[in-house]
Amino acid sequence: MKPLPDYPWDQMVPYAERARAHDGGIVDLSIGSPVDATPEIIRQSLAAATDAHSYPQTAGTPALQQAIVEWYERRRGVTGLTPAHVLPTIGSKELVALLPFMLGIGEGDTIVHPRAAYPTYAIGAAMAGAEALASDDPAQWPSTTKLIWLNSPGNPDGRVLGVAELRAAVARARELDAVIVSDECYAELGWDGAWSEDRIPSILDPRVIEGNRHNVLAIYSLSKQSNMAGYRAAFAAGCSTVLGRLLTVRKHAGLMLPAPLQAAMVVALGDDEHVSVQRSLYRSRRAVLKPALEAAGFRIDHSEAGLYLWATEGVDGWESIGRLADLGILAGPGHFYGDLFPQHVRFSLTATDERIAAAAERLRA
Image (cartoon, rainbow, N blue to C red; front, side):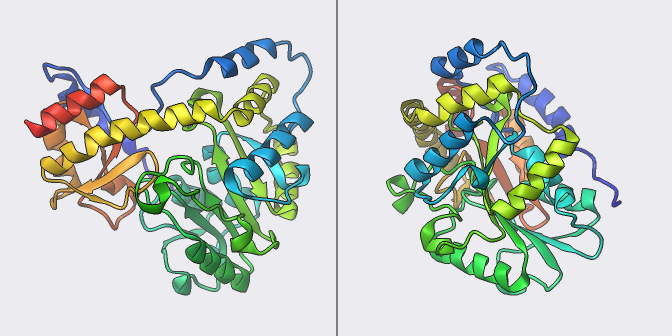
């Protein structure tokens, strides 16, 4: 097994201490952990389901399976799913990290992930003993590729893959007989251009897969759209053969979502109003932070959707992190998202209105 790197966020401790020393207190824009309350209807559903005396179903209750199927059709334009095409997971991070192992991928195999990437894609490859390749170009994906990760909208860069790009990626995956998985947990958060109004496409969109779900998966999390990060509520959808293997592995390993959380997910998936409210909150915070960053000399790249602003002022990211810390602002260095963006910094929108306003004032000053 390949050695794992140290947890990158431990490097942020001295910068966090500098930011906390600011007279106005810290504005933490580093990790995208929601700060707004979980909607009351979700909390009530959780409380009502606490008589959970029997073991939960690894595959999900029939009510949860149906809620996921209906949500995909209503919110993502994905048709034709059945309970065999969906599977709840304990958050999405554990699935990202463990998927190579669960699929039997190992030494000599390649796992592709985006160039600007959430680090757990590469960690999952290392845990399985496979090679990780950062590439956004399907033509570069080698014959040894067994698993391909897409991320749209992207973390950290907020990049959205359109239907044509998704089609090209799926076509190449089929040539390689590789499993392709799209991490789509920010799909409700579109801001600029067409994505301010249009639905961000899923890899399971009929225009992408043309009715053939073989080796194609999408994963989604309710952490962002529903402020349920503490619930660890997520799910996968797509190829029934791949999901059947994952279900068997998860049964053997005891990886099952607690029953009260499954009940809460049913309610969250069935209510669109709270998602609209949360999206409005993030839109307003972005409208305050983005121009302030630009006024302070940062260029915003991509960031047309998602929970982050991906920015650079043309110097090493650690230099930017230090300058921001002296303003009492904590962000994430581009170094944490691969080796290809050392001058970028990621700013999260997950702070209160008051803290976002404080950051904007300091940046403009």
